[in-house]
Image (cartoon, rainbow, N blue to C red; front, side):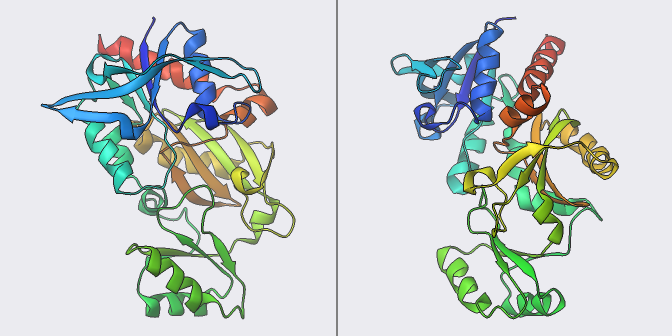
Length: 316
């Protein structure tokens, strides 16, 4: 079926086509004969319950340095589009939340992936707390006394912002490190949100596994290994991707969270696993599909389009 697809994303000219998951989604859509438009959240406009976007028709090419072509800006009615992919990167701030509210005006008549209400209701570092026994010791708070108490029990810990992304603002505080107070001052000066304190997992030295799930089922994983002397393994901050197999524990974690993901309409999800622990459930714009395809031949975005096309066919 030829679909009309709009992708809400960061500027396409600025992406690395060889590593970007959204680009692979667009490439698969184009190969299936779907028409594609791209727009940024700032281009959304809601008037009298009609949601439009100033968008450009998009063509993509798997060529480094020449990966896209765009048409002129035109206003499209998202209520007349078949599928909207919500793929802009965090931060998960009020602008991001507002975009989910706007997209609710067209979903599910226009299928929004992932479901905008559920994206809003499943912040990546909070959603994981609903699943008992999967997380490492974790505290979410602004209360300094509670943080000091946690530090006494877990003197080697990770401190990170609640709504950050891509490893931004993540720091390790080793036993005896006296910078906790100063770092909390910085976090609390930026905003009113709580922070996350988490027991440091030595297993991160062996890698932080990104597992991709489509409609609640795991389709593969990559391992992200921190650069020497670093704690963060995110690819955008210098982590190295390598091939990895799913373990029995990985599959157990997926079996626990998978049904809930599917029920919530979270079609394309990436989870982060360190050792035996689940640390995040990424529902906004999870990455890793390019690397997974390169290592294993499994194309998670093709499986995503199979799921989307199946849903649309069943709805007719």
